[in-house]
Image (cartoon, rainbow, N blue to C red):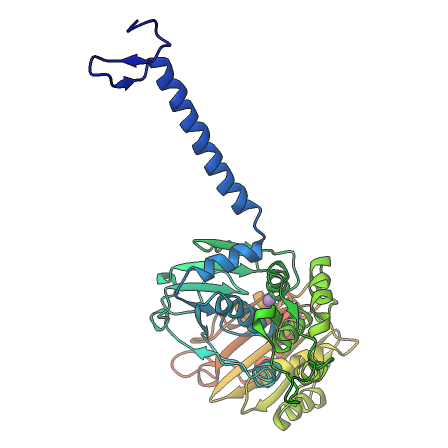
Length: 403
Ligand SMILES: [Mn+2]
């Protein structure tokens, strides 16, 4: 009985066993089922990973990674960058933290100093040598010269904008701070905020106090926890603006790791005498025509004191919109604040600077800035210029909707 039907095993003259057509189909079916199971299992493993685990495996798969902040690194961006770098380092990946622009504000510089952070300032994309790039607290590289040439591996952010990473994107626009997302990653990865500063680790045999945190045990250093807490605080105006349950959950998780003394030094940094003097000048010399105010603080040596003076003046109870101007190096800097729905500060400063050569302005509804070269404002060349006093009148006219 050599051939007893289609279903039977076929044995040829040489005695080799072949497969009938039906058996081939069964075998093919089995292979397909096994493949589907393998793919399904891999997909299940991937999908059942937490965002923190996925982020860690992406950054951990690279030899080195560059963590990039935006051009005005604030406490949220710095804390997020340090956290992202920590997760990569834990996986054996070399890291560098970079930013274009400047760290100017007193409170931003305080974070750098208090947490003893090392960031590298760059101007062009080709200064980034690492094969992997992670963006934190922003999602496109427009602040960086030739930023478009960078291959962005991962994006972790809470701003709108639609930028994505090639291998990982976690943008949650509803959250108050990017630091809340990175905090969740540490929680996902089983890291425990180090409360060593509250309860010093027990003394070892030699009687030395072991304050050094032990990475093997999964501790999260207090400086990182404290930075993340301050990042959340400062991005949400001390938890009064844009906070979600997830931000509070992040703070709850970090609570044990807060270093009170460091947090206080960051939240209440020493300010330079000039910043206080410029604020004082802005308040003393204010020109109030309710509900608007303009204040000219004259020449300053740190232009960053001008927006800080605007923040201060905006707090006056009868004022809904304020513009502070001052000059440095022949350039007038304008800083505007508005809580008045009739005054879109960014558009106002943009319109106002349009007919002056080399001037520019812009921003959001509630906050804007601008720059005007004094020479060009006063009208070098064929144009008829505007005096500083006339500029002040123009600012009021613009806030009144007359420009
Ligand atoms: Mn932020």
